[in-house]
Image (tube, rainbow, N blue to C red; front, side, top):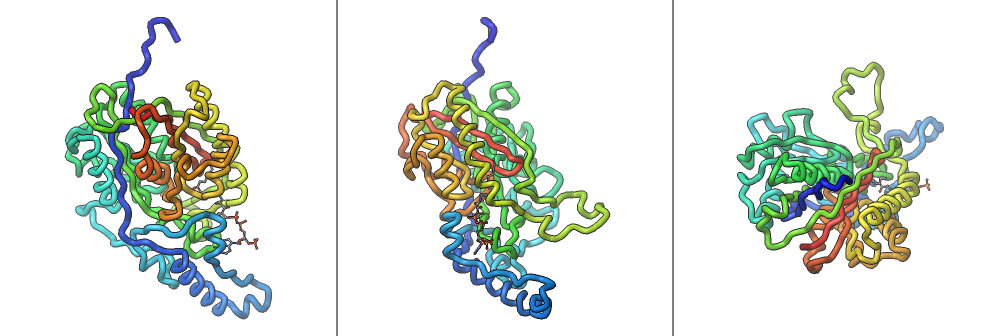
Amino acid sequence: MSATSQAPPKVVITGTGLFTPPQSISNAELVQSLGEATAAWNEDNAAKIASGEVQAREMPDEDFILKASGIESRYVMDKAGVLDPTRLRPMLELRDENQLGLQAEMAMPAVMEALRQAGRKPTDVDAVIVGCSNLQRAYPAVSIEIQNELEADGWAYDMNVACSSATFSLQAATSALQTGGASCVVVVNPEITSGHNNFAQRDFHFIFGDACTALVLELAGDAVADEQWEVLGTALATKFSNNIRNDAGFLNPSEAGERSGDELVFRQNGHKVFKEVIPLVAAHIASHLEGREIETAEVRRFWLHQANLKMNQLIAKSVLGRLPTEDEAPVTLNEFANTSSAGSVIAFHRHRDDLVAGDIGVICSFGAGYSVGSCLVRKV
Ligand code: CO8
């Protein structure tokens, strides 16, 4: 750093919001519907199964889901379609272009809650960044639709880094504020993961849930909120992997040859992901803390991406040198399942009231790509 260079201006998170879909599905309900579908499929294919042409599908199991993942339930935008054994995916209303899109609709309550906390009006916003795993259309950007609903000036864009979109969009917001590109940024993570989930596969049907989170970020000097969280630093990393993949895209109709339906929704090698993610994320957090000269013992709370309970415990254990308490690494996936980019922000939204001025925490999201991002924050 040269003698004349200045530290970038301080950025603070001044509000958070959460939209929770009104319908929840328990593991028992999910297992019942896939069980019925599986039994029907096995019956329809009895002759092929008997001749060895295809293998019988195995039944899902409630105990396995809880033990393997820690998930007990998930919220969805449409429960009936998901639980219909002849459909196994949401049944969402087709809206015309004069209606608000579904992602923008779920975003608005979360954004308004975050703005209320920040003490800001919708028209104070001058940038909207939507970061999520799945965007409902190519364009116009969902973020611009939200900007329009807010009647805000400025700019907006959508970005996708799968589950890591939470921290990648936080980093983008921080950078926009520090470089003078905006003065009040809203970051939104609207996740309708039920649309990309494979509810017909017992390996995957329990993993995901829907939700939308929002954050407001401003320069510290401008902020008026009672509660503020200084962004001490952000760090991002990516490393290519095919272990989590979804090939749905605009080229599908133009592709010569056919893809299986399973390729056009979420798929993963869960075992490999589990093994690879722990050292990768633990090393990322440790090096980010070290780079900022923050001791691990100084970290009061880890708001981690919410995909798998054991995975989070092992990541935190690797960083701390011991298993974390639930107070140190709060869990929301039991209730929400994996809400992709919204997960770590839900944890931050729900579990920060008890922290006091000076407390430091880490918001960390990780996901397909592979991708990992962390944001170090301190309560002002
Ligand atoms: N009911 C009954 N049995 C089942 C079910 C079910 N619903 N599902 C699978 N089984 C069976 C399997 O078929 C298998 O049977 P068999 O032994 O006969 O082959 C047996 O149970 C064991 O299956 P697995 O080995 O797949 O079970 P795991 O213990 O590995 O658990 C998980 C599966 C829960 C998916 C686990 O692998 C996992 O969570 N992995 C981590 C990846 C993850 O969380 N993915 C979520 C989406 S991606 C994401 O959010 C980002 C994650 C991190 C990205 C990394 C970035 C750096």
